[in-house]
Length: 236
Length: 226
Image 1 (spheres, helix red, strand yellow):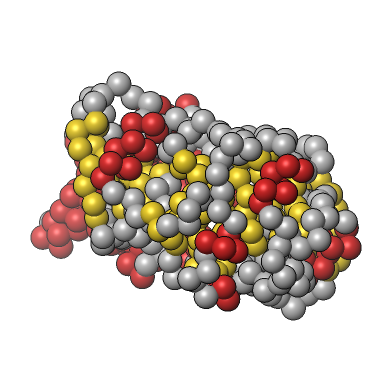
Image 2: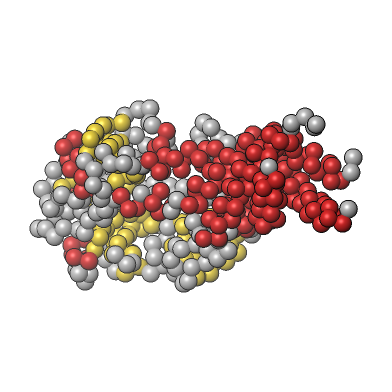
């Protein structure tokens, strides 16, 4: 078999066997490069991510806080949209306790109405809040790495935006939308991990990418022959 | 068919080299162990500490008086090394203050050495620490950082924020190799992370047509010869 013939056969049969995955790589790669990553992250869909510390009367002292809540690992003094007082976000081994820094009242876990109000404050789009739900177990795949419980707030816009809010701190934990979900799906196709969508060292990817390299290299090899023959043809 | 063949051939010539680089770098991502690349085994979580009644605290209202209160975004009381600090966040910067007396805490070489030794889980000695005011390729855009280098087989470097001492990056030689392939994959030869750059969009558009024309040609290639 001549080298040209060998390259052609190799390229042809690899196209048949790994060609579909090669097309998936190119198409998914194309999607990922043309859609702006900041948009995918949802930066344009949210606002009020930090609320300047509200000015209020001298708050509850740290000494009192320490006496009331055992096992404090950290304390954050912060504001939240819709609250006119500073808040203590107290981190303990058992989770977060949110405390009104002026009255000392424990506010966590926040009631549903408060979460809904926060969701509307965080949301920068033009849809309306269509559904709010407290996720306890069995997280949807789009937030599989997050710790539950979390509130999910869905908005009725063309992107089907979902905001995920922490039930105790009231912070916006993450956001998802249609183009993010597509990105995640094409990422799955790109790395060939159809379960967790995270493992870039899986065996199918390792094998097929090896075949993909030979596929591309045989195509490059073939170029020499196809351009040479074209030049030779008029002479012959 | 002839048009497809010509298209496939010329696109192959134009985007072929990058296509080869994509497959080579993609192969490297698949075969370089992800935990090695992330330097996971070189880093341990710092032990959590509890605020006991013995910890002396200066009430934030009293000890942060010199900052205009309206400028503060938030304030966190947290452990750092042996003591407790207030991490004060402004729109444009972060400062640390000692929680016992409210005095300004600027992290120096000794603090970073202690942090680095406490964070490092590998077996090599701490070779030295150095300060970088400007962004570096290894720490990316983390702001001013301290770099701690360890004498292990992986060439581990840990990066700590100069502002608040948090670990911002863990790197090693596997990561350095990975990052070169990453640059080749994203075609962002400067910052390496921007895969929405015009060049990669242009070339991947070419690759898309290369793939489509190739798929169509495949039908022809397997037709019985007449």
